[in-house]
Amino acid sequence: MQQLKAIARDLAVVRHSVEQLAAKQEQMAHNIATLQAVDQDVSQKMSSPPLSGAVPIPPRKNAPRVAPLQPAAQSSSVPRPADPPRPSLPPVRTPVVQGWTILDARGGYVYVENHGEVYQVVLGTPLPGLGPVESVKRQDGRWMVLTPKGIIVSMRDRRYFEAF
Image (cartoon, rainbow, N blue to C red; front, side, top):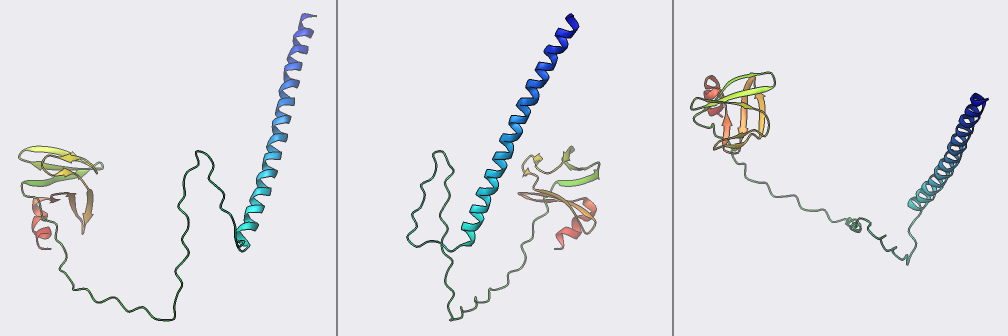
């Protein structure tokens, strides 16, 4: 008899849970239908021409502010003059940092040395006197570490980078 009462209670709990799920499913279906209707309405409004004398809707409270769109500039039949040619400047060469050298590159790190101190380098690693590492890359098969003060290269590649 006790078992039957326990089963009846469990059945009532399950029935209540199923009713709650069905109500939530109906609410979700209603929300989806509402969103589809709003989406269709917005699509129609976006494709139709704007009404003259339309009144802007004030933003909702705590809504993010959006800058109004500016109308596109009207094109004219008068051609725009071409930009004057700029004088060509020689490419800016990043200096090779003296006293620093790349020892090795392995396991995702580049190892650089300065006055006997070895540093394991990745992007953003601060180096004393040079600042944070801005880039670690290979150029023509040679490793280089770019810092705000210049580049670090291996001793054997120094001539290659200084020749640029």
